[in-house]
Amino acid sequence: MPELKYISGFGNECASEDPRCPGALPEGQNNPQVCPYNLYAEQLSGSAFTCPRGTNKRSWLYRILPSVSHKPFESIDQGNVTHNWDEVDPDPNQLRWKPFEIPKTSQKKVDFVNGLHTLCGAGDIRSNNGLAVHIFLCNSSMDDRCFYNSDGDFLIVPQKGKLLIYTEFGKMCVQPNEICVIQRGMRFSIDVFEETRGYILEVYGVHFELPDLGPIGANGLANPRDFLIPVAWYEDRQVQGGYTVINKYQGKLFAAKQAVSPFNVVAWHGNYTPYKYNLENFMVINSVAFDHADPSIFTVLTAKSVRPGVAIADFVIFPPRWGVAAKTFRPPYYHRNCMSEFMGLIRGHYEAKQGGFLPGGGSLHSSMTPHGPDADCFEKASKATLVPERIADGTMAFMFESSLSLAVTKWGLKTSSCLDENYYKCWEPLKSHFTPNSRNPAGPK
Image 1 (cartoon, rainbow, N blue to C red):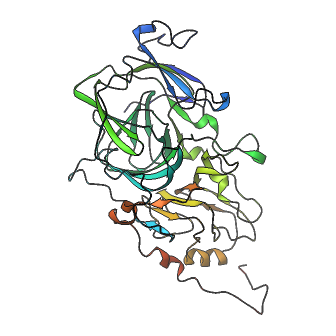
Image 2 (image 1 turned 120 degrees about the vertical axis):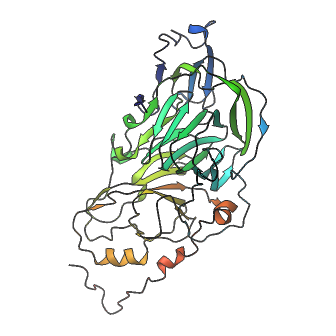
Image 3 (image 1 turned 135 degrees about the horizontal axis):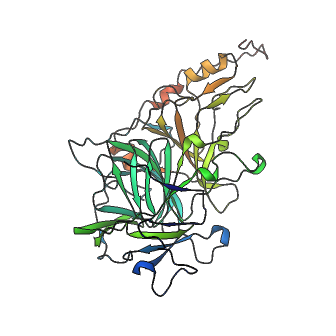
């Protein structure tokens, strides 16, 4: 596959033309009476027209045919996609899943849409407030099929297998240890090259932003210039038998037929685009004296709620870094949290749980449910000699953290058959080290 080109910068005003049609962007206006090359002008709005300039999101697309050129939508099989958070009774226990099983190509062809499975979520799609966590498990490309989401943004985290993503704005290649965001309403299709697996964080009614840096200053964490936006690319292709456009609307799936490929945008400009990011570019902030800083220092992207400082969802990573804190228990501390924490593992192992938590699996620690290092991790970290050390080399764990209380679906608890019924046992060996007659017991030397 030839190397793809990108535009750099998060949330920038960008403009792009397919080089086969130079001058395809109108000059000085958005909607001329006749567009260059006799294209159609179409605006894609990611915010209300009247949003303040800093949060107003829209792009103008100049395309061979407008996206309205399709037959009526009809309801199709939902598969394992749902927004029903009352399928099963609530479960406050610590939950962990073994790696989700990818269907074998020899048994059944499954593309990205057919391979979507809703694991958990909360909120209401119709009121544009909430989120869902999905797992995608596929082995085939989306041939003459595309998807768009009327309900929210998709943050896609591939874990196994690279994705070649066709969008109305151009093409992106997204590999494990990279992420991409396909924002609400954008049509896309995904090619895969092997049995493929990954995670999706969907947020309703808001968009992902870079977190505020506060006292950190102007630089650090995920830098805006490291986010990449595809450049314009089009195909002028008639599809015999029709091209299928799949829409997720109010949590349900619908499909419509059209005669041509939807990726017929010759040029575009605006600030509402898909984008990707390589997690290796994250500039880590960490404790250099003592104690354990909160995991919010590892936030890549946030989807804010109306309450200051409280997110509908944060995307947080735990990348390779140095640990140097003195007099400190260095792994994550034992914790009860008003937030919900879903964790996944892209590669390697997670520092607080060396066994059981595997790439392609996940865990959910719900609001106020206690969690923390397993017994073996606690014993080793309590006795370790504290010298500067590399943490998490060859590893990338991540967290979808939310202020909402997440409900797990029937697929997550039962149908997937991946729930680890023995998860709680990793804490059973914890034992009391209480020394009532010695306030300062001997520690590691």
